[in-house]
Each structure stands twice: as structure tokens, then as C-alpha cells.
Length: 126
Image (cartoon, rainbow, N blue to C red; front, side, top):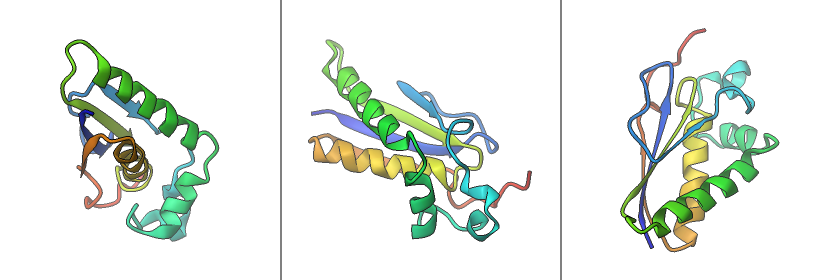
């Protein structure tokens, strides 16, 4: 199986790093930031994870991304596969997605490393 690096990030902090797959979670999935009680929490907090994971379509996107990673890993020039997943601030959707994807890929036998680039940065006020 492949080595997979997953980097979660916030588009409002900086552009994503180079990746084989870049997943943009900003426009199609509910943002916990809009809920005042979740705004200052992160994916380290269970209510944020629940809000993200209960968003319709998110599980299907995790499944599709895992399938794409497996395809990249099986290619003739296969090597490490990098996935970047981003949301607005990098504190809620992106790190939650990254963790669930990492669990899925690890269970499939991949060696997974996860880095949350922006989870500890200040909340972006919009």
C-alpha cells in the first residue's frame, strides 16, 4: 500500500500546497463557523465533528476521495500520494474531513500522515 499525506488547510490563510488531489469543501458543505456556539471550536471538539459529519454528501466525498487515492497509488509511477483538503478557515470542515479520510485509508492498509496547517490559527472574521 501507499504512503499518503493529507494536509488540511484554510483558503483564507494561504493557497494550498501542491497535491495530487485538492478537495475544496467551502461551497458545498455546511460551515460550522456560522453557528456562534461552534465558531471558536475546532475539529478537536466533538460538536464540530458531528456538525461536519452530519452534512449530506460528506461521507460520499470521503468514499470518493479514498477511491481516488487508491487509484493514484496503483498507478505505474506510484509513490506517495498527497491530498490537500481545504475549507475557509481550516479549523472545522477540512481537519474533520482529513481525519475521517485518514481513518478510512489506514483501515485499507495505507500508511497515512496527517498535517493540519491552519487548525490553530485565529478564527477568520468574515
